[in-house]
Length: 427
Image 1 (cartoon, rainbow, N blue to C red):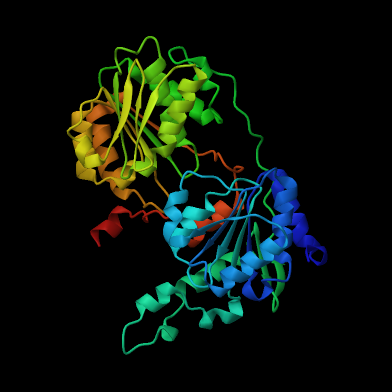
Image 2 (image 1 turned 60 degrees about the vertical axis):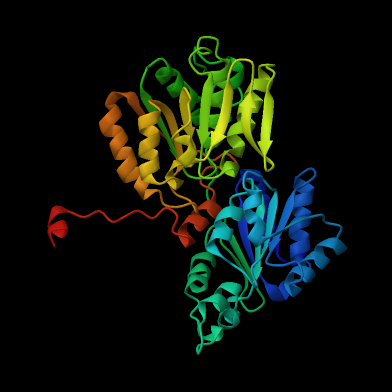
């Protein structure tokens, strides 16, 4: 089928070459006609043992069955996940994503799943065409309606905006029998990627070599600068997918293994709103210790790692409220914007040495309390012993990825409050 759509094929190949993701919105009337099959065959040709994720409301939905039938007939293997279980996928990476949005399209599902796809991979959304917008009914629409009103009368504000921000956009392909193929093209090539061979003096060089961006290297160097002080705070800010949690894990490995630091950091507290949030922190702490050939044990609870023990130190997880009573030499606070400000202030008071890492823009929340109230207090209390660092280079895909721009636009993830001058404030 893609043989008749050379512009679509060219955009798929260009995205693979440049490390960009692309979004394909496929009208549901195209299911079974070979377009989805050919897109996934392209993924299979360009990736060894490709990981393809299919997300749907329920496996018994008629559209989900038809999508699976088209893929299975072509011998394409996919992993399946219900939207209600999507949080289980956080921390994973996929070569391609297929989203059946005919019966469910919640903004949170988009925010979680789209960001799991690595560069060069397609995200295929399958749903009603723009012409069918009035007939598009999801579970969300049905929940919004109350008697005597019918769900058919609910205005499709979000869906209207999604189409307006999607069709014709750079990095997006819209395929509809009525409108044909609307191909938005690709952005200019991204700047070259690479990590400079630059290392600190306190932390092991082998752990520096695990960094995949210069910003992760710099984050470790900033921690090196601070660890000798008795009281300090390091704030790592980033959008999703910048490697901040991985940097926290590598930092923990450095604190455990650094010869000059062993007596100073025997107990390392890790806290975050949910245990699953720190999966990458423990994973990269383990990778760092593995690289150094150090032995350690992992303790799991509910299928999630909550403690790492070595003969030198231990690293353990506590939820934010219990963390206020924990004893540790340092606190690593991940997804700090998701923690209530009063608890953050309590952590600041209890742990005079801490790293606060947080997503500022993302589906998790806007983080205004963290930025305005908590960070403002840190600046007043720590002054010269506070270091802020923002990480901007993506890990999974190239800088300037068009799908990230699309996602942040339709979900308003990077919205900021308007600036007001003195005259407007007086009004």
